[in-house]
Image 1 (cartoon, rainbow, N blue to C red):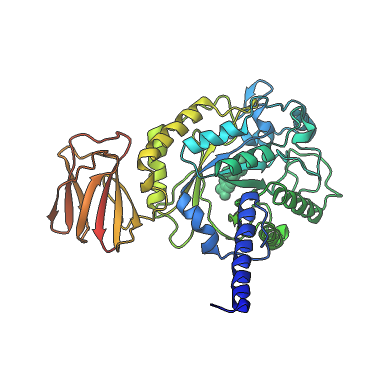
Image 2 (cartoon, helix red, strand yellow):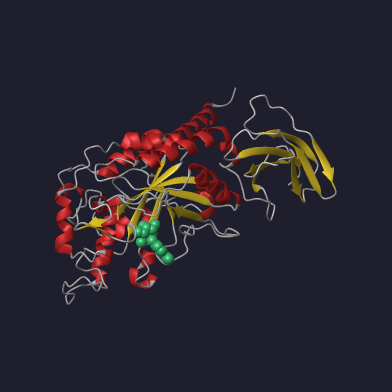
Length: 449
Ligand code: JFZ
């Protein structure tokens, strides 16, 4: 019978462990980090992000009101840049805030659509270049609380994300065409700059980021933008990043403050060979604009968007696909349709994207490949076939490993496919028709990696 003293110390340990688990659970549920002093390593904080592969970008703000048109004219370029492209002075643009009343905004509906699309995280513009804040800011009245809407959109959206298990990230533009201390003034901005202080502006940025990273529970990503008009040192970038990591210890930060940080951000393009050795995410529009633009109906097809997701995953990157809601708070129907189509494909084929790594093959003429290590020392290859072989023979060049099994990923009957070896290739005998005309996935388990 162990002595009472030993029993007491065992109970102490058990209690302490329970307490630690309770604190961690509270921290996860509330996003409040009881351990904000502990900074995670890059790989530790990137683990969920690398598995996620697919996020939704949301560009929303006052620019959704003009929606790409000003004084009866369609303004060239992206919708969220209308203030610059139409050279609208601050005193003519700022009054838009009195018209911003997105009565059809419903955070739960947006997040449920994101989940249906197979999205794992959302990044939304808290403040874009026009300087308008979609959140309740203590440091400016150029914010959502000064509009007829008077509701903190960031609070409603972050709460909906936390309820639905979707990670939430903040886009925050350093460039600010409204704040009197932001410099340089653009040529169309005739406001005097004599008393402007960029250091005072950076203090404003730090104050706003403190609110954004304190008042909304767990924030998983900080997506900076608009940093290109100053050197990182002029932004006090290192201080801003240290502040963010102090407030949210495992937050993931992009490279657009002028310091590489956690991931690269190729925009509207997929790097030909990915970015080996670096985490990266391609952000892309579904049409040609980030912010809503009434006249832009140049929508990419659902098949094209699915194939882009696959292309990016096959090179080891993430896909941040954009929606630009209307001034009433609705995601445009063409975007909804495409998100649902992507989600339908991922419902059947998602394991060939989530948690996978880049292709081991240099190039495949008929499609792309991703891979996943299996516990049994085997590797599962996912061949995404864009161009189905008319002769029913899918040739995989350069695959020397022993093949353990081959199936169509979407085949409910799990019918094994016959393969034959041909020199340094294998030939997979596939049915005459693909299961999915957009992309059919062939899964091949091989010995080794
Ligand atoms: C920026 C923003 O200006 C744009 O409005 C949108 O938010 C996009 C996601 O990010 O666009 C850029 C940023 C950098 C480059 C081009 C467009 N660049 O470095 O060429």
